[in-house]
Image (cartoon, rainbow, N blue to C red; front, side):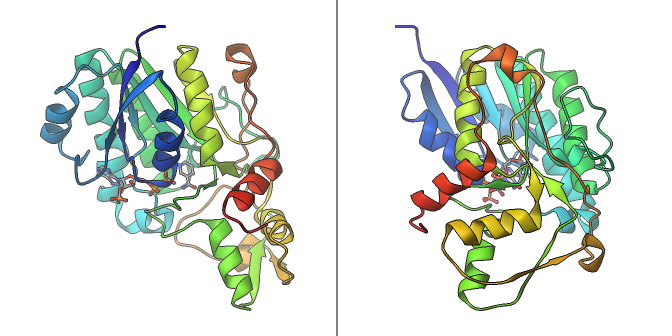
Length: 292
Ligand SMILES: NC(=O)c1ccc[n+]([C@@H]2O[C@H](COP(=O)([O-])OP(=O)(O)OC[C@H]3O[C@@H](n4cnc5c(N)ncnc54)[C@H](OP(=O)(O)O)[C@@H]3O)[C@@H](O)[C@H]2O)c1
């Protein structure tokens, strides 16, 4: 059997991070070191250097981010310090120890003003501070780490819930519907919902294949937020109306792409693994959480 890869995971208690831990710790291929914010603050170059150069990691996964999209508009320095400069610190340390640097990125690097899903070849053009800070992070990682993998995911849901957002959309819909709260959800904004457990499996497959560069790793197919919400309640057997509203009726501090659905032109050439449709991933998530 080949030697296991030494992997450092930053952001290990986040929504995606937790599922990377869940999946990777089941495999002999990986010797995982989990790092939470109490172990490492990626804004601090010295911290990052000290911790990442303490062992000969083969792979460093940076799943840490400042993900509060609306707050980023005011807290621009924090957004850039974590999502861009923090990513640079991690990329430098990865370079210095000869590790592959994995940076988790987002569909929000795209403008979202066209009807088709975005592929890896499409030109990013973010319209929010969050998206701009993440794209800057991508560029800094690419420029700094000789070997990097940038995995873009989209609209994620995972059992841990987004620690930075205090839950996820699926849980919010179920909680509000069960409480009998009125639900209004936008029906003209489209994306590819992504289960973090599936993204973790994909990352495993990408590492096995020695993948570098940019990869889109959303669950397949796409939908509006209203369609997503409707499917959540339907699968969870909750009978509750959801009013469809246009995004213009739900103003937010950050401008969001109207269509940020992701599709991969590369994945089929790299692995036989296919991301399942979001509907199947959602059903699996709800079953695992005993909602259905
Ligand atoms: N959530 C989405 O819908 C979405 C969509 C597309 C892409 N993404 C990307 O996916 C990745 C994972 O997101 P997620 O949903 O798992 O978010 P999350 O649950 O908020 O996890 C982010 C993690 O980063 C940690 N963190 C924040 N600031 C840090 C710092 N300065 N130093 C070290 N760790 C820090 C957080 O620690 P604490 O919990 O202690 O704060 C948390 O564990 C991110 O790169 C995000 O940009 C997310």
